[in-house]
Length: 327
Image (cartoon, rainbow, N blue to C red):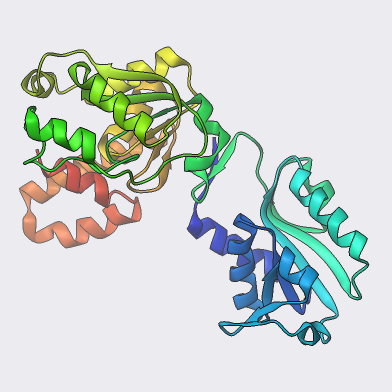
């Protein structure tokens, strides 16, 4: 699973601007993700931007203001139309056809930060070829990959319960029924895999239905109580087994430690929703060992921890350390 985050996009947008022989007067973003790229590039070039509709109507966005005077576009000689990525080329081809029909009075070129091995045929400029399967931080919760993914509920679709709410009784039932969603994917989810107990299936299904979450299967822990679940302490193994049995291509997990363990057990990618990190086989073992060593050193020598933490942060392990310290 090829993955790029916002930090990657920012760096690659700057590289795109440096390495491609382009000198545009205007950046045009293809909604929606292309507007993110357009914002980055217009700041880099220090020129105005707009969206595709704005270009067609002659409206520009510059220095925080919107100019509706069609004459403001008369000084434009060169336009760069951009999107975050091109895979099949369908959206880029549709945009090109629309703009070609207008016979615009300036040069128009097309670009994308990421293209598939065949996507470069639809653009004039690009930064990197990223082969499928691929997913990006800014669209992962609305990407078709969800249809063949396992997705955690608490910490992803909604927040985790507080200790007071997590009483395995009436307060918990109220939480399950009333908690506000954090994200509602617009794609159908293949498998919801949660550590919630099977006895709370009715409340969970009602909440999912109320908020329009579409899914194929809901996997829940078949244990009698919260105490029994805590005694087993096998959340990651349980989720890893579900991941393997479903044949899904990706697991989206909220907890960093569990995410690393799920990937280690399955040798498959896991996206940690809390840290926005894609944990891959091999990398999961390194991250997990780094977290364990950092916590061990902290317990042995608290005074030396700042130096240790610097190295640990380099490996993006801070969130995992904070989870381990709770034990």
